[in-house]
Length: 206
Ligand SMILES: C[S@@+](CC[C@H](N)C(=O)[O-])C[C@H]1O[C@@H](n2cnc3c(N)ncnc32)[C@H](O)[C@@H]1O
Image (cartoon, rainbow, N blue to C red; front, side, top):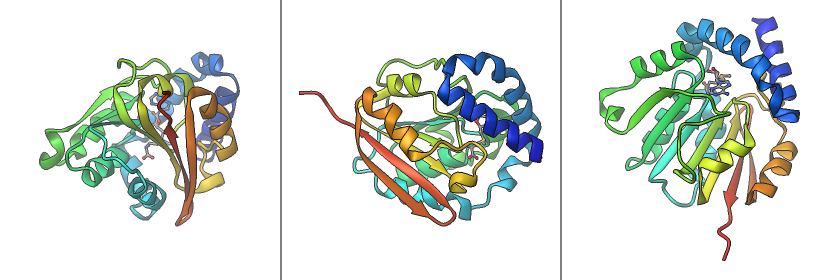
């Protein structure tokens, strides 16, 4: 477990600094999370979701379509769907076993508007600007791709359940530095429970 956390941390740092390195980490990281899928939903307690919950309350406009990148067993996707009862929500994950768990854990009342797919956040199977809200909970940010699928006036929300102690952790200043040149502004940092979150809103060019 400790080795896995360390590997996740090293991967995040390397890939955020040099996205081209992702091809070397992709296979081992997928294997790691495939193995964790049966227990993942229990590892992450409901209290750990506090930063995501608080940040979702600060999203000004209810999204029509939301994307949860690195959804794991789908906790964030379910929370987004509950918070925005009219939104269509897509959760994607690299690890097929995680997606299988996410589908299994989805309650019938959400099944009509929440779906899960296996996909790589570094090369998403979606069109430009398809999502009004893009959420990452404990997930490596692939900045170019997440910006590409975010709508012109959309919002990106990056949350970490344990702040800097989260294995997959990207500091807020790094998030801001990568997101600002991609058209994001109006950043808001949030601390809640043991975790942190950052909201970034895209400004529409006149
Ligand atoms: C630390 S877990 C977080 C899962 C979930 N967001 C949560 O907090 O419960 C990271 C997840 O991101 C997935 N992941 C990592 N890199 C990915 C990528 N490039 N594309 C899609 N999913 C990825 C992993 O398979 C894993 O399920």
